[in-house]
Image (tube, rainbow, N blue to C red; front, side, top):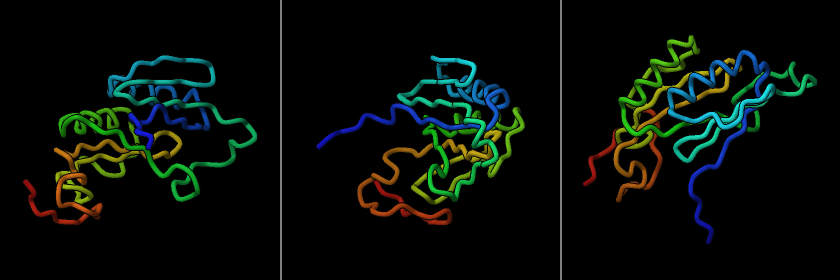
Amino acid sequence: MAKINGIAHIALTVSNISISKPFYRGLFKTLEMKIVLDQEDSLYGVGGRTGVVIKQCPSITKKNTFNQFNPGLHHLCFRAHSRADVDQIYSFAKEIGANIIHPPRQDGFAPGYYSVLFEDPDGIRIEANHIPGKGILAPGLKDIGQKDTLWEKHD
């Protein structure tokens, strides 16, 4: 069996690179990601064993807008080290004027699941979450919860 070591990179196509670059530069800085490539039509940030590339879409497809319910990407979620990191990412999103879907809150997807959800300039949803301990992989947990799931405490 193959064993993975994270996701090497995720590539996102954006409708206007000149609008998206400042957003992603700020996000990468907030996430302590290093910009490893900055070209006229793309930007690539790497950090925390994660890479994110944004690339200008060809003009022929500019009329199409992002819809998270179409086949393809639904949303992108960064795993934060702490709840304070989630709060800091939220501060960045507010500061840059991102559309906030929900501010930091605790949900029932896993024990202690704490997240913020916002959108980039194209409406691509970006989440940052913190789950203490092993989260859904904790002993005795078999299912991913829902927003309102109440978890029993497991040692």
